[in-house]
Image: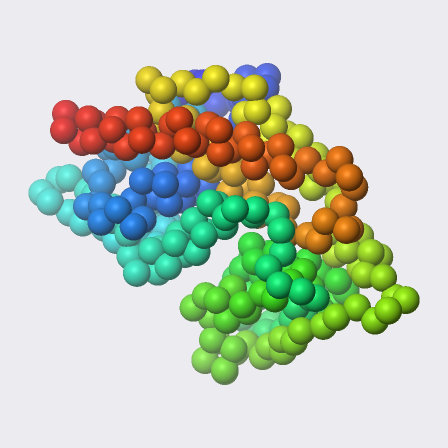
Length: 280
């Protein structure tokens, strides 16, 4: 995979183009959160992302944006800049790891459905964007205007993270549980809120990329970063859905098996490689 320049190169046929933020979150979640990791020099992060095709300028811009959003803390020692986690990024990444390593990340927790309706003033588009993004990550789909639905019993307060549905963020929100009424199947709602064909395609893309791949242990640091980035992308695109609403050949189990097989081989060599780079 090409290293890229300041301007992202055109991907070669079959090459995956991942955003720097996507790769940084994967790297941080895999190698920093919960590890008591010291801030990492920017050069280390730029080097790893460069090997994955992200240009130096694009990576620096992503680091600056993430620091501005309080997902990274900037530490300066002379002319050297390093980046560490913040309490906010620790929370976000710990929550993401919970699903990344869930026994079955595509199965709902609990029975029935969770429904959410929210209202945000037009002037607070930033809050609206965050609510939509966090609901999507939590597995909600848009059922109809203003009404979001997720299978099972979702912890809505946790899903919304630091957002405050009490006026401080101009957010008005209603959340409640629901169960199907006998004779009225939720199958149509599932097809309305989620594009199952597109989700199947996302599984198949992940499998085509990773299922038959041999672990590249000498390059474990880059490989595990790319693997976790693609896995997070798949989890964001495919929520927890009840198996009774899915086809018998639904590909979720194959994706889980592919991720676990490679991650089990790459995780420890990646940590060892990072330690070597830091010692150089």
